[in-house]
Image (tube, rainbow, N blue to C red; front, side, top):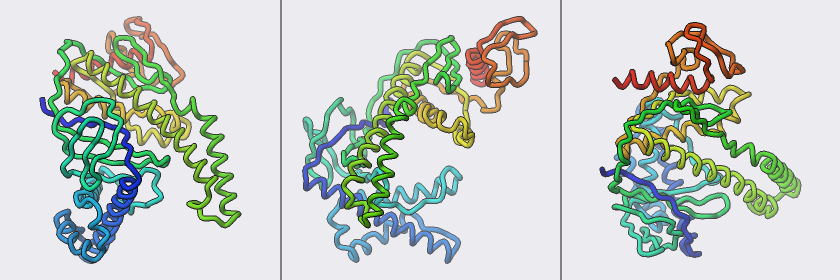
Length: 372
């Protein structure tokens, strides 16, 4: 089966390449913001925006006006326009907010290229940049379609390579599983297995708070000294320290989610999971920090694309399905239960339930019903 697969590596550009990467990021941002402004003006005048093709047709004239745009990869500029058009399409479909202007102050800066690329040993050949050394932690299989280069707040550079490759599906297992997502435990499976919530942010919370307080003090000191933040060395050093903590938390969380999602997809042909409204739940001030830390949405996204790769089936269960109110043994509806109630006995059949395992079993049963 042919699928698109992403590979992420750290790259080590030399001084000239770092300068060109910075120029490309800035040029892509300039083109994006220029056409976003034109899009907004056109909408005010006519009630209609611009299309990708209309913007693309005007790009050569913009490059004649600003000669420095010719110094960077032309496909990166085109991809910036596509990103803008995609943003408007998602806004129209009510999937995203209205596109905003890009700022050079954003923590992570990036650009995408679709030009000719190839890998030779531990070097990547990229348009305009030439050969760039990278940490080749695994082999890239298939034809490279695109690459996104990112610069982090610490000044590190990473590349995400998208390749068209043949993915060998996992063997069929004949197994189905229901998953109840939680906070005390990250996931509770219908086979009785409970996956611990690693709470990556909470583990680093005290250190993060301490370093953020230092950052605030250095920000105030820079203001007091009348220095622009870019020139305030102590502030910039502390900003990197805070960014490193955030990066470590994100890497740990991603590693955990990748391993867990792969294990579940490998061991089950059918995965039934509740379609929780994570964004809505984030409005709960008491739970918002814990919900952000567990990253349910990222986990579900990983399950979805891995299921597609390996010919598995994902069944999303309606968020209003009363999984914690039903007895998974006899189907008795026992009504709403306070979150503090962690176990209960069915008054109809006498079965004693662990609240979360019972919910995951109900999710499995509902998923199989939908599938049939």
